[in-house]
Image (cartoon, rainbow, N blue to C red; front, side):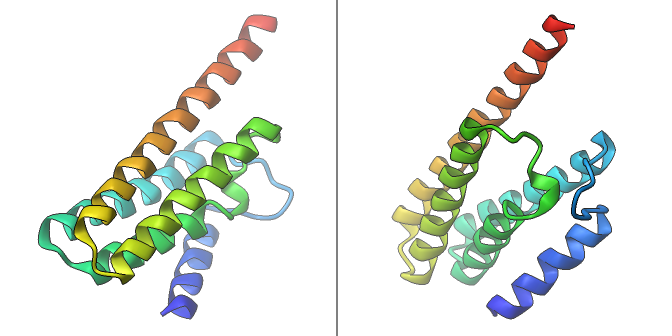
Length: 134
């Protein structure tokens, strides 16, 4: 299953144009984040239906997406820490799904969502600060 997930993520990365050394254009980054959002929505579906395979698969896919070149929109220690915390949260979600623990999976999903919001807020703040400097 991990091999299939890895190939899916690589295919998605190629689809959105993630190539080493390229800065991701805004539209490609937006498409890439929409893929993450779709996985997040699928986790919610899995939680509601107690479909642990669906939860685990999409948690793993989100974790793998965070390793793609397109994900790396900033090269700051803080951004790297946000990404690390996001991966830890998605890994905890996958683990709860493997253990078929719906309560833990739901808690873990809430942490994943919190990590997304924290990071997106950070990126917006950094981008606004850069605009203020110019």
